[in-house]
Length: 314
Image (tube, rainbow, N blue to C red):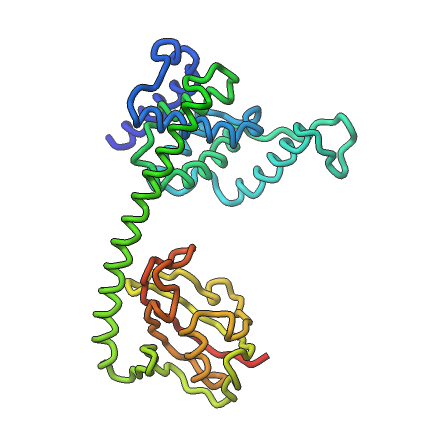
């Protein structure tokens, strides 16, 4: 049943986009706040992808947008994306008048599969809209995209779109601030509770700053001589719930950096380690990324867990 509903949704979206000029005549102006927001976002997205419009299968594009908004993985494989992306950019470059090395003047680059282009671009657009997915009416969004790609008369003029955009942006920013504040408060309390219990665990040492560590493997080499020393390490970083947000092990690529270039918990903790050692650090948010968190999966006021292996002092 769920699959059938998703298929019907994709068909309705495709119809909304392909028949947008007809629909516009029947319902010329978005009337509710949600419709206006959705149309404005659609117009903005249409303008951002206008140069790829000639190579874009719209049904595939909308299907990929909807799928991404539902939290699904991209409908195009990494291998296909790696092939389609550069070919698409080459076609866009030629359309914009750029000269491509190795191509004779006036010649056309190889064609690309329009459905693959739609899936690629739709996945990117869907991911970018995920934070506001509850604000978007996809059929109205599709009409906004179609307005640009078809070059048809806009249902809202530039002044109206600007007004909608300003109000929409302000409301979303206010909502995100509230959500961030709530998350920061929750994470701070969870971190404090965890660290209070963890400091009594066998083998855990708590420093004066609040950093906690455990020796997983002893080392016999030298320690970093000062707080700006260069180090080479392997590491894995996790949230308290076990979510891995960064790992040099996964990349099979140790990191080299100066201790003055990293978070305070690392600067302090690595100076405790001899070369060859492996430690586990529990780093309070004030010694990590604090109230702001960090792009890439670190929430505000998050207490972090790192397993760190000091390989050498370059």
